[in-house]
Length: 426
Image 1 (cartoon, rainbow, N blue to C red):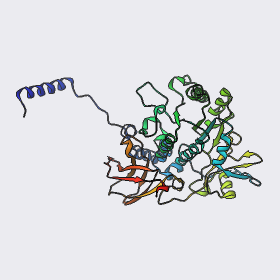
Image 2 (image 1 turned 90 degrees about the vertical axis):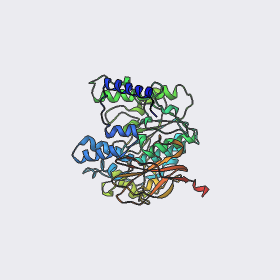
Image 3 (image 1 turned 135 degrees about the horizontal axis):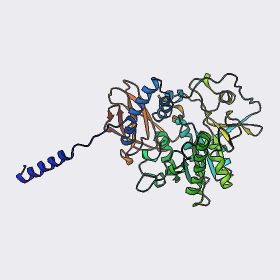
Image 4 (image 1 turned 180 degrees about the vertical axis):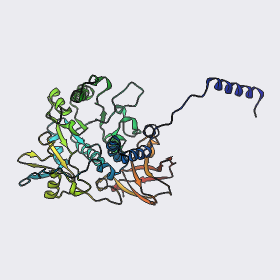
């Protein structure tokens, strides 16, 4: 019941608010919804619309972002095209192939830094990074550093350096790690006992404004090398480090417009890192669009798993990276399994879980959220659904998960729980 005094206080508060005036508010953009609410669809739909209208920046960004949603058709189409006329296949007569992980572990034994690259629109590369981290842990690799991790900021800002197994893996740790495949790679690394570090260029390490592209590249690559030394190597003598980068950052020699991170790290420390290329080797959606070196390797060896190829002691690689890195990994072309990427289904630690999808309208994502992380974490897996789809298959590591739908209108409440046991547990 309202008392006379209570009514007076409420009226006074209302009068004070009216006197101050309501503060103007701006609607969140689709990109801001992604950062603030963990919603993937609004930004994805906006990028698709703008790309279709001819916006080149949106088209390029869509390739990266579509990989976050598992939309491989869109992600790969952004960069896939027929080979340039006149490009010749390499002569593989006498060439040899080896299991990629075996070659990486062997090479890692001769150094203390392993650097693997990715193409930013290929989620499968992040899954392979997880397999590499898994393989490097027994021989003592204990640090995981990634280009995507946001440089540390003043407390209490989130920092990847504080992340440990069982904590929510949140969007604020990095950009590409918002891909659930990438997030699961880092979660698994934490379970294996890796410690984490950022090394990306900070704002105060930028080249002076107007310096030009080459100067900007040089400033960033030097900052990355300096930061990895400062954040891991100097305070942790004896550290063994797995570093995950994009594209040319893994180059050990000058080329492609600059002297890149791996070359600068080698020069500064005297450590000869094991450098691994995979960014230019992914099979195209249309086999006719395979790069010549990829087509030659797949035709010659027909691999069942990821391989490296060498001839006369030299690694077979794309023309852009030949002679620039120690190993070049080629991945097999795999058919989809239950509507999911074959490369993800082939991971022995993931289990297929078919679920019944509640009725929905419009675009939708079926998401599996780790129960221990609540709603704060990146999904462990999600599937972009077709209109009217009633069943879908998730591919999940062992654990407990809540199932929910994200629609264009918002994230729906979770409706079910599933437990996934390790394969050996039945």
